[in-house]
Picture 1 (spheres, helix red, strand yellow):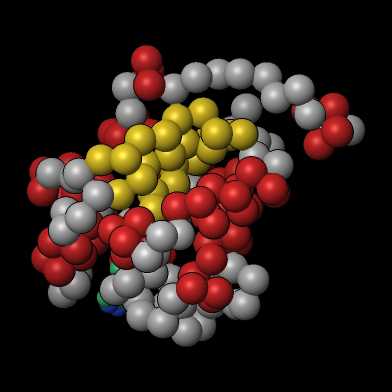
Picture 2 (cartoon, rainbow, N blue to C red):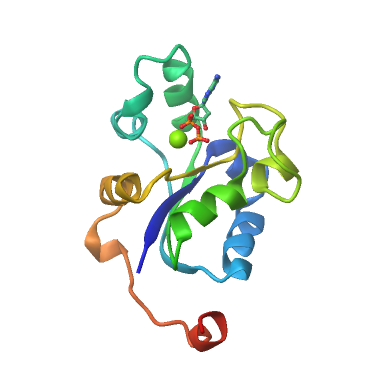
Length: 149
Ligand code: DAT
Ligand code: MG
């Protein structure tokens, strides 16, 4: 089953949106398989955002991610990588559609609340970067037959 890496960024935690975000993923029908609140080291933030290391905002992005705890999660379900990106919305919250997490709760690209892996391969890389195997639980939701035909 497909898995994706989701992180509620420091602004999402500080603004008390952890329950709101988790609730949206649960209500959609995805399965939570890993969850932890953690402070992020500079090394981990730099590795996570390695693809953006030449971008002008890289330094402030890394500083922001390390500035206060984040909630790191792994969610599972059919098509979860692309669907999570839709639930999250466009990178700039001002352009994100209402009904998406960024569209409903954000006003600034540097405070866009949440990260979601952008492709299946990226998800695999990010999950192994943030979690070890023991921190992930595979379990069968009893509602599965009511979610999938
Ligand atoms: P996304 O998080 O939607 O995958 P991204 O991978 O292009 O977006 O960028 C990673 C993060 O970097 C993004 O969530 C917020 C920050 N960022 C992106 N573009 C930015 C910009 N032009 N100015 C400031 N921060 C930016
Ligand atoms: Mg990205």
